[in-house]
Image (cartoon, rainbow, N blue to C red; front, side, top):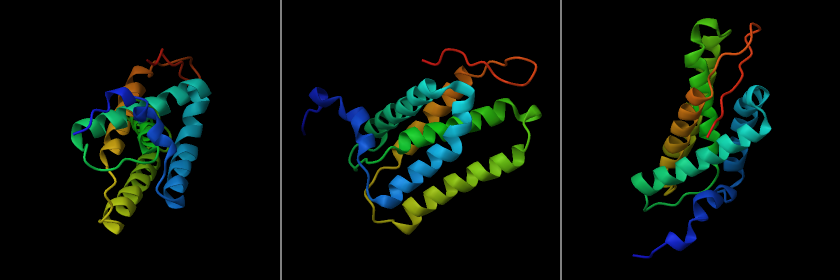
Length: 161
């Protein structure tokens, strides 16, 4: 068994490796569809922080749950955006417009990704634990950033760290 403690940079830099164009396309689609509305609420630097925290939580989840398979791509960050959207939806459910449509769309995106990664490509040795870790990070950071703002329904985020 090798000791990788001297290579902790790998916990963040795995997000720059991908397993093909389709994986890059899914991450970009998730980032655009889910990240742009969140960026309007929280700003670009908080979204960059949240995305990278999702990548880090995904890597830590991988270390704990599934350390014997490969991890590639930035799905931890993309699923942090999914988690942020879910926490925003749940926390603002009574006042959220199109809440059922939003929930159905998020479920469609996640089920489509799960189907493509695990049902269509069952021989893949790529870990799914980064998805779980990223989503958990997004949920936690979404709850931490959920302070209600002014009377227009805009939210002023708390410090997210």
